[in-house]
Length: 317
Image (cartoon, rainbow, N blue to C red; front, top):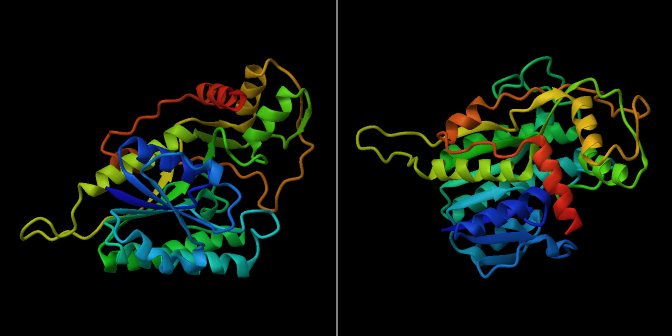
């Protein structure tokens, strides 16, 4: 079996590559020619790196030749300077649509991409996949635009398509500016951490649980053959899937738990952090669809405490 992963040097992409390699799969990692993060890739005989940026993904098809699944985890312009740039996000959409085309040319059966919780926008209540999307920033708008264009394209090409809406995934190797990375690092160094009031609802998911969920979705999708039943032709699967944990509670509760785990080092300064323009939005993901589409094979293995403790252990190793 062979799969293609874009964004393979990123936090989610590199861990997803590791899981597939552990399962005996050949992984073709599409990485930018000028990437400074190749050390994030697992070292393995079944890992094949292909120098290719998002703007030239179709040119890389001959190097891969054939694949069973395509996992599009790459997306530029997620920093504060470019997240609201219409030009940058438009390039992301165009390159991502080329990835769908590449998946078709490679003979893939499954296409998955990394969506985001920000597609929902300011939702008051449970975030179900079919809820109306009202994204606030250009990044969220672009992710939503891509899904709307990719879904019919995948259907025409006979590809099973999962648009994976990741919520707050954390673990060793995450962005250093994420709230979990900041808390774990700065509190252990006995520093002050500037925070919002942290009274809104939140959801965190450990990276191991997240990539296992994606792997199980893929395994189940391979069991669904479009048009394989005689006299009962079936369309390919096309679904948005929330990738989140079952642990939703006030953000302050998570913060206080980290503070306890690190031995109450450092100082938590609530109400001193200036919010982004979307403000302190609560997130309450519904993961009923994730459980159903994995056929009961995926089960959350890590509590928040276990995930934080393992993150610290790996960072100290």
